[in-house]
Image (tube, rainbow, N blue to C red; front, side, top):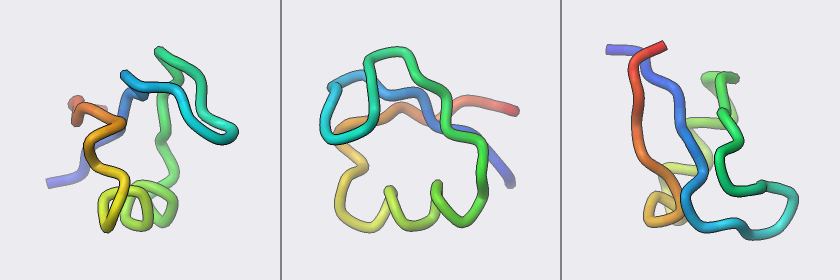
Length: 42
C-alpha cells in the first residue's frame, strides 16, 4: 500500500503539518525518522 507522511515533530527542512508525497523520500524517512511522521492515505 502506498501512503504519504505528515510531519508531526519538525526537524531539518520539514515543518509541522508538511505532507511528504514522494515515494523515494517516504522510504528514506521511514528508515530512521519514522517518529517524526504519521502515515496517511494519499
